[in-house]
Length: 276
Length: 286
Image 1 (spheres, one colour):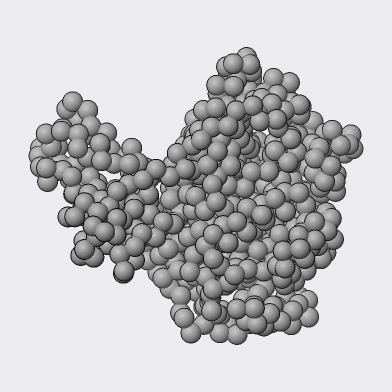
Image 2: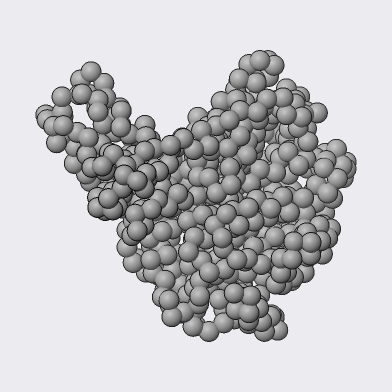
């Protein structure tokens, strides 16, 4: 079973839930899909080893063959190639690697080279098989790294995807294909507003979901009231506990220090299995 | 005209709370909410929308089933695995490149317009505001950010404002790059947790990569004073100034519940520290 953990708003506790959940259950893979700012490893302390480079194909123009006809730049939807009267400029950071320019070039003047935009790393410690993607600094496109990361899913295990914040393409790439999505929120105007945006996305993608309310004693009861009206299961509530906050700030998973929470995360898995 | 982007790398460190507070202190600013896929600034500033602009994103492929012979050439040509085995378009995978339409020998594929979202030009009690809402499960967030920034510049010219305060998204990718490209300065809001420190290092690398001067503000610094010291030392080593240290306080959450900036809500310690932060930032910008 594949379970994604998303939120809409950042900083609601996605990584906290993902790591503590993974540490509490058996036969599990944890994927850090927040490739722009991956944090899971900080709580696991495993040694990471590189598995692969994530490359995208970027065009290189042979200017001795090019007659500057402009077909490639006209075709490119991403403004990644510009043709001047006697020169061609390629902007690798804008290129999505679709291959269109090569297809439309009448002079066969364009070839590809691989450009690394990020890496996949893995490690194994205790009960968890851990994978993470890291997007290179200055690179814009997180989705190809996330998609490559998720190819390492072992269907015989419970796979947990720790998604990035927001509701845009990196989130969609992270939750797509999941059997279930946990949305971690807090009951504040920001938390609730962004939860509704994330719910819209999950409904459109037809992924079943449930809610975890983190820091459940700050804010008000707007999230619970909404879940009650919409019949959305509230799977867990985590209090605003200074001890949990402190452990978090030091990079210590709280189930390691407060073991009764392990039981609650096992129950969380049971609730999800019962729901789907 | 100057542009300042508030970013963080890590989500939930207090970008929007601090950006909204700075907006209420700045006397002559335009506000731009560039966190277009989870925009929250409007919950505090309650803008009155003056103008709504339809923003088109990249196109999406569409197969005419009456012409398609299921030859699979489009599927082989697509680099994004956006065409399924039964030759249908996965619209969430499609990047709108047009390769499938070009490759199709039957002319069965056309590229159709796709709406990215709405951009808004608004009025708030602190001045003009540009913001947007990304369509549900739409992907062109970077493009929408560029539209919001363009609208903010036009508002600044129209209303003779000399500063644009941009509330940026979390992360380091597409929409962050679009939010910081060419701005005069970024203010990075961090927190003293191992995640906050890790993400601070990466976002400062991004600012460096694009040659944008950066300043740092440590929020909730007293949650872990040891980590706050580590951040201060780190910034010093990189030659980056820590412009403010804000204490952990429930005033920002209480202000948010009342749809106010923290400056409007209270004149307690947190607000005073934000005022100091603003003085430091303003000095750097001029």
